[in-house]
Length: 278
Ligand SMILES: NC(=O)C1=CN([C@@H]2O[C@H](COP(=O)(O)OP(=O)(O)OC[C@H]3O[C@@H](n4cnc5c(N)ncnc54)[C@H](OP(=O)(O)O)[C@@H]3O)[C@@H](O)[C@H]2O)C=CC1
Ligand SMILES: Nc1nc(=O)c2c([nH]1)NC[C@@H]1CN(c3ccc(C(=O)N[C@@H](CCC(=O)O)C(=O)O)cc3)C=[N+]21
Image (tube, rainbow, N blue to C red; front, side, top):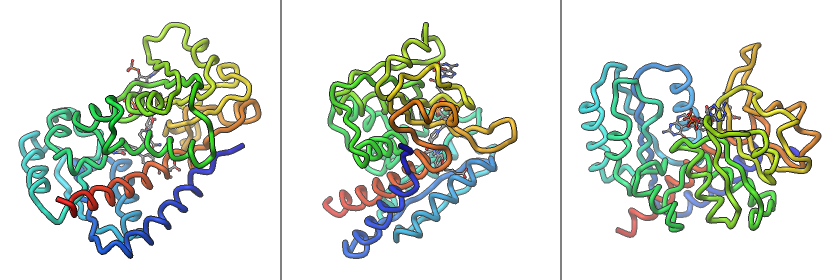
């Protein structure tokens, strides 16, 4: 079975649009982008487009590549204190000279729709999530939509980044899976991966995961966004060779990516609801 993230995302966005229309709320997302990386610009454009689609207002702060950490922090502070803004997303990666952790920590946890602030990662790891990072959150939605059982299953997450691997592991623990997290220093990676009932690959290497590395009948979730030898978009998984061996797999494009955006919209509405109660 091929898991259709695009379809589920469209369904969630349509539901969100209805909910926003009748909510009486005026949710607003602010994005911050530093520099002119074309991939980052494209992602931010996609996020603004999704906002438009569901009826969330959006505003974009664009800062020059050579901005200092202090200048970025000042912009974040302005957004923190703007009562009309419910969600703040600082597009990553930031330029190398910028203190990314300081910027992430500067975003008010109540507006942290990316779920990257240590307050929100801490809540997630304590089993009391508030804002869940969009990519792993979107993956959990996909698993639920496709009625894929996590309880008691062996889940293997390859990648330990703060934005994907770690929160993915926390969500799977919270969902009663038995979780192994692998990374570049993992010994016998192939054996670890082959033991997985649910394999989540968030590595960033084109076609890294081949059929020999996955268990027959496993569920494979491909987070990677890479380019193949022909400069075409592809995941971490060698889709063609793996798809016939597994019970379910996400394609790239059309799998996890659209769910990231849908979850960002859901987090922004959630934030607007929380602010309305304050
Ligand atoms: N679809 C979506 O919505 C999203 C997709 N992405 C994509 O997902 C991928 C991962 O993103 P992100 O987590 O931010 O990336 P990072 O580069 O921050 O993390 C990559 C992780 O993979 C591990 N890794 C790298 N090479 C190997 C290897 N050969 N064997 C085992 N582990 C390895 C690294 O290990 P170590 O820690 O030891 O260095 C690290 O933990 C990228 O392709 C990115 O573009 C990201 C966000 C959203
Ligand atoms: N603060 C922050 N938050 C993020 O959530 C964040 C970020 N920084 N930096 C970069 C990564 C990457 N990311 C993606 C979002 C959507 C798709 C997506 O929709 N992809 C489409 C394909 C798009 C295309 O055609 O290239 C798909 O997979 O079908 C992919 C990747 C969010 N990220």
